[in-house]
Image (cartoon, rainbow, N blue to C red; front, side, top):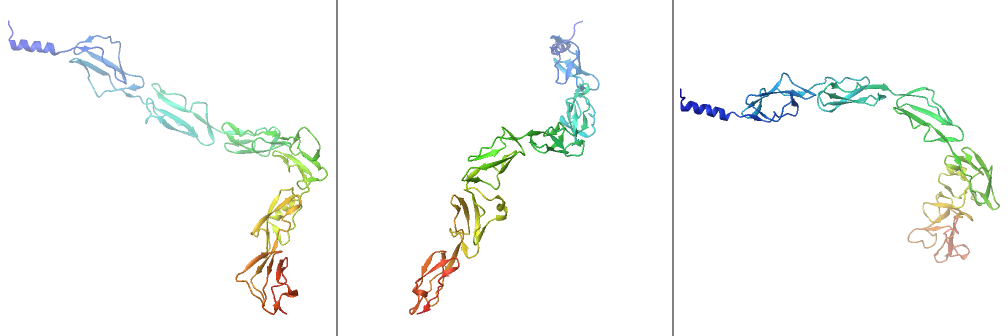
Length: 381
């Protein structure tokens, strides 16, 4: 029986439009094909089964089918999602935070830190969510403590034997030794910082021009004392003639200088802070100190204060404080138009009224230590 042309055309159209799928089904980022799929053509309606990659999971089976030459997901809502790992676990005396990711799922990483006074036991301070769960064991925080250290060439002054984190251990060095850094140490997770230690401190033999010392040694330890003598015409530059070896060198520095200066007795004045400086006299040439004068007296510079210096000839200036005289009035004479100041040993001419004169027919007055001489007073001739 011959079919109608319309039916024949429908059958031919159906056969021609059904296309096969070329090549294996495509792989997604989180899923892989089940089994082996060679590079060939797959007919219409052929199904491919997928499974999730390690670290991912889904409910049910993921299937894609060949339709009109394309691979189409049977259930598009069924996708692979990251596998959760659950809570990573707390550690006593510590805490953790998410360093990678936002949830406890595949790929997440948590980092643990210990509370103050505690430190991590072991090297791993993190856990990572892998396909099989969390890596590493939960880190353990142990309390930091230090035992009283042995101080070589020194001894402890702390009574405790066990110290917690950040507690200080104090010690002293034996005679002839000094702290390597300082006289205490702090307990840390890596031990004492800085390490308590005492080092032998020595001084080289002192070089004293124009002087000799004893005892003479190649090296002197701290606290060793020497006595020195100066040659004729020279004197110790500081009070006394001894010096002690310290971690800073010889104190005071042993030196011989030309005759030094004793404490300056400043007439009508005094040194600033002279009670502080008095124990250090005599002093060597070149030393200087600030001083001030009493009311009515001024330094030669006429400033409020000045320096007094030790020289080969003694203290300079020799007269540190000079009388200051004010010339502003002449009795029975012509007074100046404005006030003037004169230093000790300076003179000024005086004009008396007719019939008047200074004593002994003088016409000048001089500023002396005790004031004007004679007084600015004209007497009747």
